[in-house]
Image (cartoon, rainbow, N blue to C red):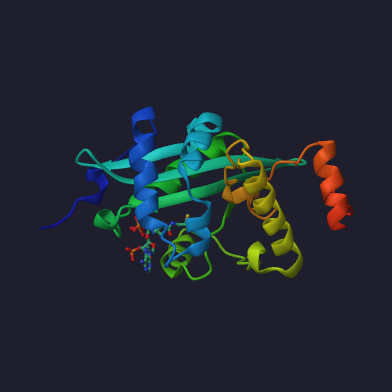
Length: 220
Ligand SMILES: CC(C)(COP(=O)(O)OP(=O)(O)OC[C@H]1O[C@@H](n2cnc3c(N)ncnc32)[C@H](O)[C@@H]1OP(=O)(O)O)[C@@H](O)C(=O)NCCC(=O)NCCS
C-alpha cells in the first residue's frame, strides 16, 4: 500500500498526557546495549524538565492517532549567538523512514529561527549511525567526537575505602544516610557532570571522622 507521508504525519506541541508515552518511547529507543550514553541520560525528568522550561520546542508527531515520534529542544544563548539545540529526538520503530523525524526537525527549527536561532546543535552516541546519517541528511555537519570517561568508585583504591567507610558508618548507626533524590542531568549538562552530587554539609562529626581517615583534602 502506498503511504502518503504528507497527509499522515501530524505534528503538534507536546501536552501533559504525552509525558508518559514519550518517556516510554524513549526507553524503547535509547537502550543500554545500543546507545549507552543516551541510555544513561534518558529519564522522565528529561521530558518533564524540558516540557516545563521549553514547551514551545517540545513536539510530538502522530500518525492515525498513534504517537509516532517526539522532539525535545532548547535554546542556548552565548554572547550574542543563539543556538537551537535538539536535546532528544525519537521515532517509533513502527514509523521510522516515513519522514517523521524530518518533519519534527523542520518544525522545531522553524520555531527556533523565529526566536532568533542562527545555528543548530545536536549530539548523539558516536555509534548511532542511523542518527548520524539522518542529521547529515538534514544538513548538520562539522562532526566533533566528545570523549566521556567513567569510573567504578567501589573498585578504586582510595574512593573504595571511602565507600566502605560510609557503609560501615551507616551500619553502625543503623541507618542509611538519606539525601534528596539525585537526578541525572540533561544531556546538555552531561559534559559538566553526570550527576548532581550533594554536598556533605558542615557536619562537624563527619569532618572529624574524615580527618581520622586522612581525607581532609576534600571539600566537605
Ligand atoms: C534517527 C531517527 C530519529 C530518524 O527518524 P526517521 O523518522 O526514521 O527519519 P526520516 O524518515 O525522516 O529520514 C530522513 C532521511 O534520513 C536518513 N535516515 C534516516 N534513518 C536512517 C537509517 N536508519 N539509516 C540510514 N539513513 C537514515 C535517510 O536519508 C532518510 O531519507 P530516506 O528515507 O528518503 O532515505 C530514528 O531512526 C530514531 O528515532 N532513532 C533512534 C533514536 C535516536 O537515535 N535519536 C537521535 C539521537 S537523540
